[in-house]
Image (cartoon, rainbow, N blue to C red; front, side):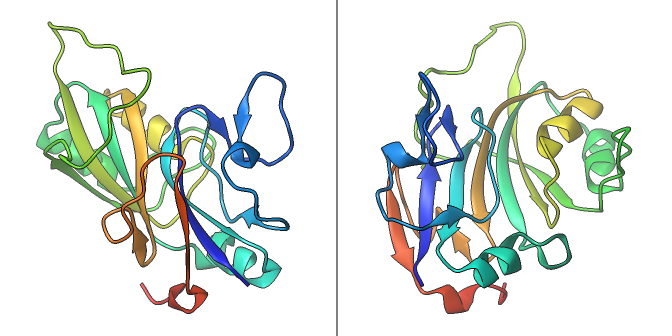
Length: 187
């Protein structure tokens, strides 16, 4: 029953089945019978958990038992105290209201790999980095949250899921490692 930590590269689809002209998990991981426990959009990067154990996959991704996930988010603009407070409070995104979360401004992580291709840079518009930790994960939620407070996401990297992080398990994009599954649910 392996639990695989994988650093999903930018533009890789969270599926093993082939997709014409697109990179998938199968281009990086050849272990038979494993599946992602959760997803990341193609334009998001970072930590993804995979397992061959259906019970564990359910435990990791079920809405009632979601592990805390931390995202490093480069946004267009500079957040003020009001926008950070709005991100942390329940936020109405139209089709759902987010649960409270943690959102703080951080320095650009010095360990973070350069994105290929790089994000667009505009000399007249500064960018900032945020660390957002939530226990839910609806479709494109972090991107929708930052846009709702006037800070569009330029780059999104999931850095941690529960007890596992790219800090404790430094993996470059496309790299993976196997870890003991018993730590899940203990964060």
